[in-house]
Image (cartoon, rainbow, N blue to C red):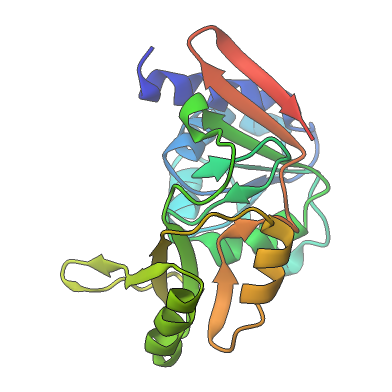
Length: 223
C-alpha cells in the first residue's frame, strides 16, 4: 500500500472514536485531511468540531461540517490528529504543518487524544524528524544559539523565500541533531525559554491511542 492509502486507512478507522452527539477536536495535516473527508460521512451525528488550524477549518466548512471557536467550548470528548513522530509511550513530535500551538490548545481541551499515522512515524527515540518550535520573531536568533548549546541546529522555516508565518503570526524554527530521550523534561525546559511560544514535543499532551497504518491493516497502540 502507498503512504497515501495508509493515511486513508487510519482516517477511516478514527471514525470509531467519534462520540455521537459530542464535539470533535480536529488536527492538521495530510493524514487528518483523510479523517476530515471521512468525517463528512457521519457529520449529521455530531454537533460540530473545534479545529486546530485555518486550513482544517476551511476543509471542514467546505464539507458542511460546523466549526466552533475553541474559546466557546469547555471540553471535547476526543481530539484526532496526526504526528511527525510517535514513540512507544505515546510521546510525539508535531508541527510539520506549523499548527503546533493550536494543536496543543485543542489537545488540552480533550479527554482523549487519538493519533493517526502511518507506520513510518513510529520511532524508538524522538528527534529524527526536525523539531518544530513556534517562536516570537525577535527571539529567533537567540533561540538558535540556545539550541546550538544543546547540540541542535535550528533553522528558520521559510515559505516563498520569506519567514513562514503561523496562524498566530509567529515564526517556526526547525531543529535537527537532537535525540530527545526525556520528552517530558525536554518539553518542560524549552517551554520556559523566553520567546518560545510552543515546542513541538507533545509529552504533557501525549496520545492515549495511536492508529498506525500498516500494509497488514490498522495497528492500535494504547498508552
